[in-house]
Image (cartoon, rainbow, N blue to C red; front, top):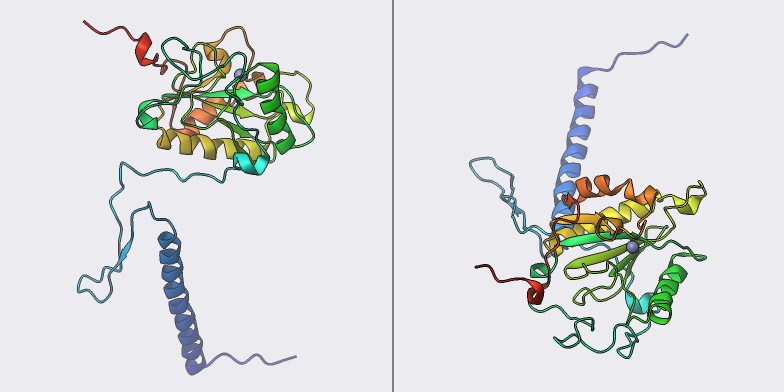
Length: 275
Ligand SMILES: [Zn+2]
């Protein structure tokens, strides 16, 4: 049998010293890493490190800023998914907006956050071989099938969690009839209405998380107040389908938005001046 000798006090102190050095290095590298991380983000509050102060205060945390902006998620640009250029000779969205051409291509004036109120959630009701092909097909359907100048939605959310840039955000969308003004259109790829349980009829985990990231960013970037499903505005559609509609309350809670169509504000020319 082997005789196990207890550690001497000297050996114990030596181990404690090593642990102390390792712990100290970890703390310093941790702070440096943290600061390096903060420095990469220019629009965030800067953290100030104060050393050797009599108060023994190592890190001064900033007070939360009311203008804190949720970070913009990675978005596949139009160039990177191969979007077609807008066509201003389109049959049903022809030319540019004017009093005489109220259905034309309308670019918002002033700050975007003063124009937007609601994010409207849709489903694509179809799916191609992959996310990027689906985004291209939706644009083709809207331009060639519906006669619109461009894809009607502002963003697409793929089943693999990729987010696609649709119509430019400074242009009124075409996705919720009668309520397009101030409504950001987000389409989730899939047909969430079908009753069968095949995979493309259910949200994927990646898709749900990407949707939360996108809508959280839109909520702060555009100062949105509400989130709604397409069918909350247009009773003649089942969009975004029952399986996605069931997640709207969770999306609202995760993004800090009020659920429902009540946030809609008509365009200025349709507002009756108050007495
Ligand atoms: Zn829809």
